[in-house]
Image 1 (cartoon, rainbow, N blue to C red):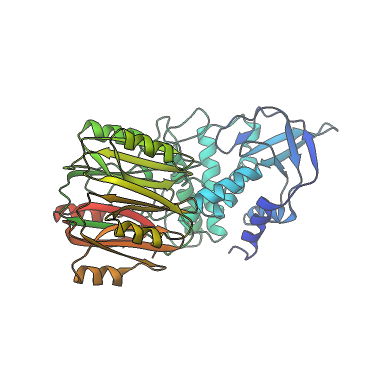
Image 2 (image 1 turned 120 degrees about the vertical axis):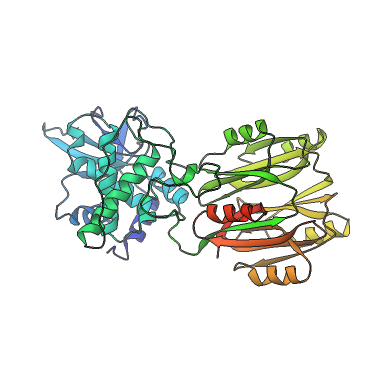
Length: 479
């Protein structure tokens, strides 16, 4: 099992300041990079920490070998296995890795196992002799991915943790390239390697990894669920779950009657769903929910809204100028959320909302809410991102009376009490370690239900639709 200091070691791997560097004269023709990014320009090597080397030694130790290659931090795009000719004419094996990339993949996947998986993948290229056979190709990448899954099981990772190196927005790619497979194929290879390791422990059986094909399926991963009312199949060997290493994260689904919506569709994706939005608009659907969690965007589009037209904008900064322009053009804010390093703003005509105000605050904006209520406005949007709460207050809302609650745990008791008192959920979001619940009277909503699941609740959505309910929101946070 994994040693207790391994995560600390990778923290050092990311954070250690390096004071020595050297130019590396390398022939990178046969190098195997982690994602196929070209390695160009002069390559410099920096000293790796002893802890990082210890981790690599532990990886190879699980198969009874000793390390026969060098490890160096470098200015490569991500990570690569390659060979260098030394001054005395001999050839030396190297694993080069970018500390910046390691830090980013840890942040995007929310798991240190992703970084360990990257190193295991590159080690596999050397152990399998891939750097002697030519540059990266899809079959060799899958072999390295399978090895990584095998080793990560041996080191104590769960399957979700083992797959976290690919199950994140940084690494997701729908289609194969000349050098690397689609993400769906790589996730499958990790799963097969992981299961083979379990089989050796006598815990399960596993089938052989399918032969790689040029058109390996790339649309069946859990991040590309089709907009159907049945639970989609995946290429992994377990039921889809969240990709974080903590077990208390949940998708929170709220459904109800009285929205007036019908013909709903939903879509989850790593990339911002611009194509899906356009397709929905072409089918006379409008955005009724857009959220981000578990490294995925969740888009819900509906027929039966009052909207006559919509627009969306994504910005790395808070889009105050885009909001002003939208107001000037007769639009109202109907959604604003933060995900994958950017704000996503949705504005609509025909919502009935007017005289809107927005406020951004580091702390929960309770004083701004009270002032808005005193001015005859109601909460119509509440979100958190980039260290900031964003509150939108509007006139023209159906809601006659509102109350809000914040809790560090999921507010199921507060929801029940609100329902008992004649209130319904009009907003539920997670941010800054708390659930923020907004309950309203007079909203027109009724017969509501909520479900929390550690996996995306597609089956619960189907059941809700069958019961005549529609999606109000899907959020992600601590249970």
